[in-house]
Length: 269
Image 1 (tube, rainbow, N blue to C red):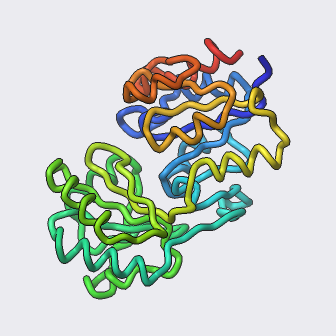
Image 2: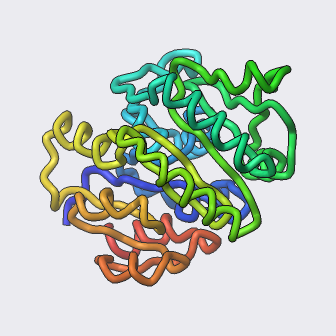
């Protein structure tokens, strides 16, 4: 086995329940010396701490593939591929969600900022996980205008019935250019239809001329399936859904047990 590149999801995989890369996990991963590309639904600013902890270089994938980028001097994001949602669609979604589901925590992202118009329970919860502060837009009207370069709209609710009703409502809009995904029990996220984790992986495979058997990936959720299916050695976390485990080459320890670092040394070295 000669693994030349590892692709790794963040939430539920690399990051523990506190939203962090543990020092012991980071040490194991760095020690292995295999190049890693993070592939995440997160924004670049929410990926920075993990990139720094693992001392990563090269291509990274944010917003589920909506942004493929490298980090330049002074930690500047240098885009390679950009797939944003049309502003007309962003406005329609924001206004519809706020009108029909006013209690849902609603926010959105461009490349460098996270926007909201009020600090509610959902925003506070996301802050506790990502350690980022949102840009607060003063009026609801300004907030609902969105941004011309919106990568992701995020909705948070701890009411399962409300999340299901919201998902049903969004599907009923029949907007073919977007993807609606559950990214956690309390989360619904909207990205462009063409924002796929597989696109970021395909870019790296082409650029580095890697064969499938020279690659591995770590993941835990349904959004990781395209990534796991594209590599030679898909490794799934112990905390993953059962149907995700069915496609695994190996099942490693959970995200709270340094599963990525353990899995690299146990199954790939």
